[in-house]
Figure 1: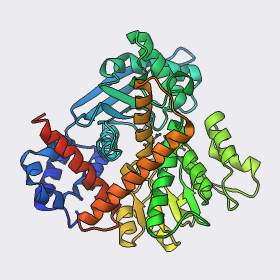
Figure 2: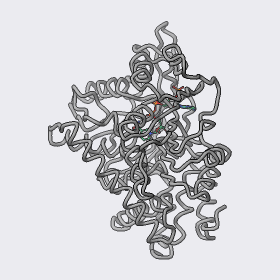
Figure 3: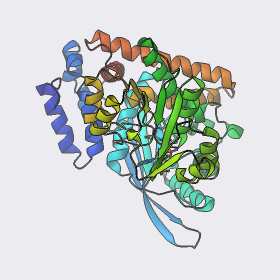
Figure 4: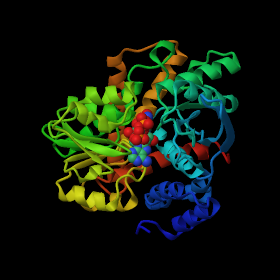
Length: 449
Ligand code: NDP
């Protein structure tokens, strides 16, 4: 337990663990936020008295449902669907859907809890939620994906609405899945309600830059952290884990800003390409052909593929974990620091273990936690909602400018709040404290809800 966690917070944390047994990722996410809140409860004793933390840790609503579907051979499968609507004080519930076999309630709750604070940091009117299923999209045909999405939406639709709950994508849910989900929502409700889902295709209400936003935003956030240290991407070697939506656009923007990304991965292994990752090839393999990252070496004989390897063995100055939770451990962090690391930007949600975070902070690494660094995705989703509400669509340049401004604002809020609360340079405290205060004040203003 950290030194900052006082008795009051420790007992609140223990109560939350007891009420939510077996949900290790959720406990971890709650602990990480509570760890920052000691000085906040001193400054705002009313938050303690009105039990704001306990209320925040209890979702407003949790929906768990059966998702039956048939595969191409006619065989029946049953998956479990989730939507955890955590907090709607700042706006309609907003947060992605994850389709991955590892999904269970504890993962959806960790993601939904994080989402409350991330969304508050964007400064846009969105509450926090997350959802998904233990369905594995890997190796499924388009028809099977459609069958699953239609069945999933057949239950979920009754809980959604542009003023109620607005899902988007996450792991395993990209443009294809959002299209099938939107089509089924429209069909069941007989309403063309564009603002009910974000991450839509550009032909039917999607926003330019939404696809790129999480990765671009993460690259912008790190650029700000480097700027504060009077540095830039210029000439820096970077490693980006994953090869999905967030990873691809993180690589694109870092490269554009002068950095050299030399490694990326999927869950089977990683590619190390000293010359710099060939992004067009990664995009073709992963986005278009849905192949594995190992196929990269068929086209680049000078690149290495390490099956089952650990991407954090690759020395770099900027590390961007963009795959999944707890992918970067304390040992990985030690190795990275030894190899000359300067900055870490979390494109994924909670990718660094608590031990890893401690190593980075003790070594004075510029460390951007996911809830700040990857907030560009949901921020651009909120911009998509704005465009849908006004039946408008903005240009790529204008939307990207809005994204860049939002990311620099988030950086500034985190930086200044960390200073104000006596921990300069600690973006974890800055992000947790600034967003918590915003949500807590809104909750108090609305009475006991
Ligand atoms: P994608 O499904 O597009 O890509 C995920 C990538 O991570 C794939 O390369 C995948 O490899 C790899 N991966 C997934 N699970 C594991 C695992 N257990 N071990 C190793 N590698 C793994 O997802 P996204 O890019 O959308 O999401 C990546 C991360 O970013 C997640 O943490 C997500 O919550 C977060 N995020 C996403 C946002 C978005 O807008 N999409 C917004 C904010 C955060 P493989 O193909 O082998 O499974």
